[in-house]
Image (spheres, rainbow, N blue to C red):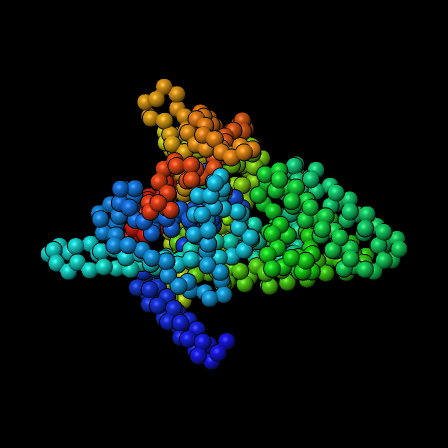
Length: 479
Ligand SMILES: Nc1nc2c(ncn2[C@@H]2O[C@H](COP(=O)(O)OP(=O)(O)OP(=O)(O)O)[C@@H](O)[C@H]2O)c(=O)[nH]1
Ligand SMILES: [Mg+2]
């Protein structure tokens, strides 16, 4: 890179930093932490939000006040704050959905980011004059959901983490799924003791591979609390020894460990600490510390489809995640130096699988899943709202007075897609007893190309459900 280019880059960086600081100081900067476990709908949500921001069509956004009042002037994508992070591939996501046959964007494998600047007229003052505009900067970050699961590990040491994992592993279906890993562990430990084998590194590597296989099968079974997340999706750490660790499989005892076992313990403990320091902390520090608003996406329908064990596991996982974020009041000083999350929107995704009359029930089920989180956020004085949304709606619902409620969408077939009209799944009345029948529904494809609804490609925003209410909650106070 030439000297001139370097100077230009430096100036651009300082300009960006200056702007960020000014915007934050003036409170015109929403850094939105889109949080959600793998498959919760983050990438789709970001795409859907961008669609609505960029098109800003008041007819489609009645619950977003600034749009409803006709004050939106427009929005554009802008240079992103971090030069080292790839840009979120918004256009590619749209193109994938509009392809023939239409497809969902692939599961996210690395970090990306995007910045939008939205301009709106200020509210007219009481004397009628001085109509002026205001710009709001909105930053969105996308990342693989698996990585989020590592955040709670930052508050644990190796002994605590191991104890917690052992507790989980003592219950089905984990117990059964983990049996191969455990057998491998006992077998190799025994062999090491008998033969005085000293290749600790090889033993740890092989047992870590078995642990990784366990995590993969647990994911297939619909479990959520799967740590370390990078073992499932390593990113740039593929094959790095820093990922070769697992929880200590044995209960602690009064007696000290034999020397070989003690060495293994020390090695695993070291790796655990290195993982926290070199993998989890940088991710958290660089990307999560500066958020001031949060969306927590929850795939309630997906969990209901997997059944009661999955719902319980989801509940536990979300509860574990909460202490990873800094919640609290956002004074000017905080805003500048250590922003805190002051509003949290908890969202049940994929609501287009249902008819609108069921959305209230979906929201109620979401509420019972996150009730421990809700209590603690409200205790901290955080502004919280719950919504049921479809970031990109793939269906059309029958009329409210139709004899049989149905949703019409497109499903994938061996040689393309076909349109189907089906009854929506029947939601359980309650999940508090921990017993309910798993629901069933079709995974509709985003029928953009098939001509259902309007498309971004044709110059209109993609269809959605209730994103306007989410936008109102997250940005309504900024105009
Ligand atoms: N019907 C419907 N399905 C959705 C919607 N949003 C997401 N989905 C489905 O959920 C899947 C996962 O959505 P993503 O947005 O990729 O989820 P993610 O949280 O980014 O997942 P990772 O990148 O794996 O962490 C999609 O492939 C769709 O099948 C929606 O609004 N409506
Ligand atoms: Mg994704």
